[in-house]
Amino acid sequence: MTKKIAVFNGPNLNLLGTREPDTYGTTSLEEINALVVERAKPLGFEIEFRQSNIEGELVDWVQSADKDCVGIILNAAAYTHTSIALHDAVAAIDTPVIEVHLSNVFAREEYRHHSYISDVAAGVICGFGATGYMLAVDAIASMLRGN
Image (cartoon, rainbow, N blue to C red):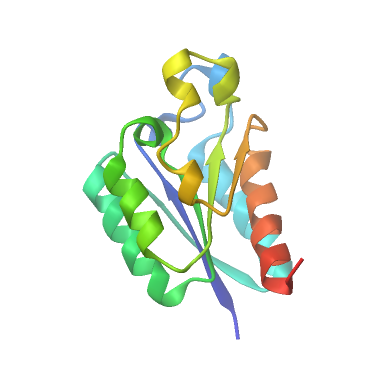
């Protein structure tokens, strides 16, 4: 039986590859999706990959994923630093959530140092670019094995 991991991406990540490449790299969101699928397949995972600029959609997706996913990879982007609603959605579910950021948020502006997601996430990965998503897949696999 294939297990599903949801990968949810927040605002402006649809512009990856062209948006501030010095900060976010040149890999597009579509390319990240392909890399995640490639990494997940041999581990027995199916990937549900979505992006929205709308906070409420992300909240709805997190709530829905609790029903049929073994893990969630969440790059809430700017909502990381502003969304109590996403915090509450993650806190309300049993499915482990890995928070991912392409850049090292702690090496950036002070307001990016606080996350409303981190304290309810199973873990946080930041600063490794697109590789962070693959690390999150590995982390979910490890948690499911009990490591």
